[in-house]
Length: 318
Image 1 (cartoon, rainbow, N blue to C red):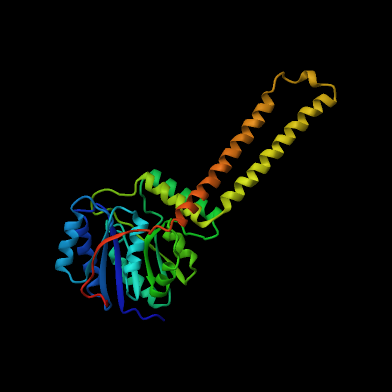
Image 2: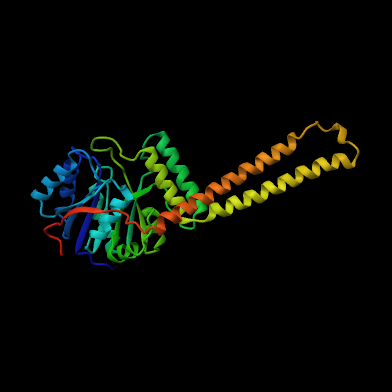
């Protein structure tokens, strides 16, 4: 059994003016009746609208609210990492500030953590729909990553989760620059449970996760968690070489039987093999190049984020 006394709720926000105040009210309504001591840490990930002013007003009105402002937009995973670094509570809950991670789930998450789970990972219900393209791409992503990665990741999970202090400290020991927290939380191997929930509509505005950002997250997940694409490309290269040998044997068999004159003149078959193998080689080099690029970015040792300012919650233990 785990006894949780303090909880920090991490909420990354990017251009959520007009939404974050509504979200904060629903969050406060959900936690006010709970016995734990709460702090709410908003991570302003380089917002360019009036989000900063709204967060400042929330911090002035509620001593439990802290605001960490990043120097620019570093991305959702970096903002979450900043929150994990700054939180000092017994448990940390990360959730989005658009209302699609319902605060009403928090009591149930805490109850599961009290039972001994270090990770309570929330999972969108089967009926939650985000549009045909996002549903299809998400399903393919989880299908693919679970077949090439050694770290199983449940489909439909996002960054709505509870982590206990031991799990947070374990995550903080992972220094990689390209961060995919859904995989990292699974990789540490702490006792975990997946809890389904119903995802409501956004409180307002539109999703800040563009196609480019989703592709970047998918690349981070793939190339940070497995070397299997390298092995797959090597296997494909061997298969292409065998195919070329079969083609060669096929052509030679005609000449050995005196049927060479029946073959189409020219070198079309040979050119086909050359182009085929050349294409496979280029793909393989591209995969290797991506890995080298990731290694280059890792060895530079740049921080995942830069903190411009931090208004600490008044009720924080520090």
